[in-house]
Image (cartoon, rainbow, N blue to C red; front, top):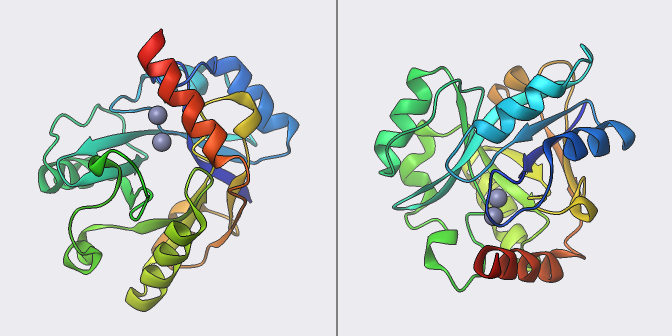
Length: 211
Ligand SMILES: [Zn+2]
Ligand SMILES: [Zn+2]
């Protein structure tokens, strides 16, 4: 199975992607599923899920939550995560039987909130995965995430962090059968490129500020 586990739609102010376009792109590029992870809302994922009529294609309801300690990706949730406190948000996700990955933990960014603020080993028992390839990261950021995940024995996932159509699928996670099982058993394979990262980041920066 081939999934992109980090995508945005126009429900994020830094993205212009219409739900129907994201779905169309994913299917055209032969993905088996996507997680839609808009900033602090599941509305985008619900919108894409509603449009999906293909039983062989999975749309995971999710969100990228900007907590006080950095961003986390929540998967398989069905209600909005209310708290912005990391520990409380992790509890909320677990209460909904969701999965959680730390998003781009070592991203180089002007915004401190974009990188994870505490040592990952301190939350090891509370997370399911680390986003070890993010297409908007710099190479060193991804290498450090891969190394950390391997050292701590944490599952690695990959996602493009698509905000605009041309970014879709630049990183993806491969697994057999069932994603939840693959993450729990640390049986994922990650792939991706960061070639278009810098231009993508700038486009989001200007979109969020000018529109
Ligand atoms: Zn964004
Ligand atoms: Zn994102």
